[in-house]
Image (cartoon, rainbow over all chains, first blue to last red; front, side, top):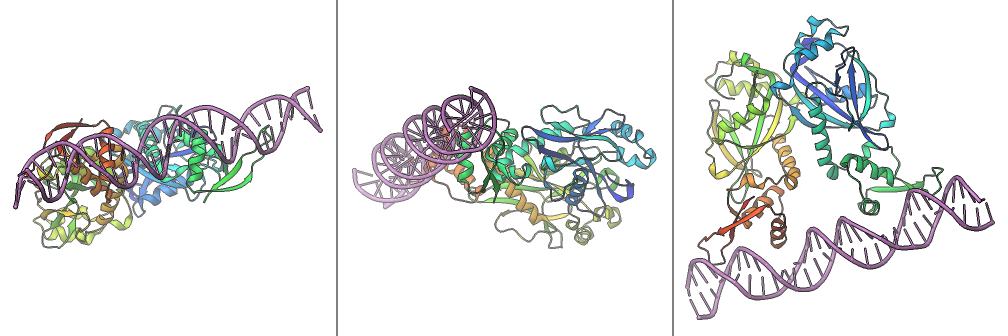
Length: 233
Length: 233
DNA sequence: CATTATTGTAACAAAAAGAGACAATAATAT
DNA sequence: ATATTATTGTCTCTTTTTGTTACAATAATG
């Protein structure tokens, strides 16, 4: 939800919501909004303009919130159950905002929402709340606040699809800086898959895939051998 | 699109389209509609009623066309580009139908369409055209007619997701009769993956998965050893 | 009753993954 | 300086999985 929100500018009954993943070196986290004075937590979402591609709408919305361009985005599911829409929650959010409730009546109807997940480099992001929201913060995926409407289901499904796509799509690169150590790469895999991996087997497999370039060593000031840095080809 | 199509009954700007897969023993096929006197071919699709779950709308629509209940259905992608809607094609379809064009103006706008694929037992189906369509027929996936709008892209994407899901989800069962031979099972896999598989390796892998029950032999009247029949556990 | 084509399974080879061991090596402590 | 420490890169051996070939079993046919 950005800039103005006039009914005639937007396609009715359709919204999008985004599960924005980041990795802080240890944990997988996602960005969650809190709305002013409501105690309501939600995924960042928005509407689609009349003359705008769905993909573009999402790309713009996520870029505005993260300040990043060229974000890895994947559409993963569309949520269309009748019960998912909750007009009372939406009404509370609008009432606590600066917006005129009458102008926002259209938001209280039924919405079918298209879910996207994004993978971004945690360190490059400085999340900014928008007009409706109080704050936007990173939360580890295993300790999220209670989310409004069906947003918890949206997160669960996003994780499920992310995990299923992970092996095939070589997604790890989007969560890491350009250069990274083998250990960091392994930690991303572990955080996404939710399980520990064997160091030697993991390293052998990654090196055999012919997808990595080895660079200089990274001296971390620790009392042990320094690891090599790698990047994706 | 079923029964009456009055604007106020349906969510505006949202449709669904379905890629209905069947397997005739050799080839993977899909159901394609042809509209009266237009030469336009399309995937079976429809709209979502105001007070109906998206999943329900699709389930009902696909059931009506195939005459089957309990269909394996999977939502695979939502198509939301601006360029996908084509009002001239829709107008021609309506003009050639019994419907009043004025009542159908709402169908000529922009639609975001949710794609589902279905896997059904080819032999149990007798496809029936609806009010708008002339015929509905099976086409092998590698020799489809030219489809309207972005329906070819929809088919390509459905196949792509089907293949990606195939290994994990044990989907073959939905395309076969309750009892089948190992050879039939292999042929389904080959048709979906689009490649030949090794007989002995395939058989060993299937048997080791502990998902099959072996039944009596199937005597086909052929001059060789009769194969066992299997079903899924 | 031999012939035919296909099926079920065994046997061996090759490749991939699991598991452990160990030397190399940056910093730190002595 | 030198020993100590923890982690890294790599090697080896074992186990599991997959690829490949071979072959006996067996329904119909001639």
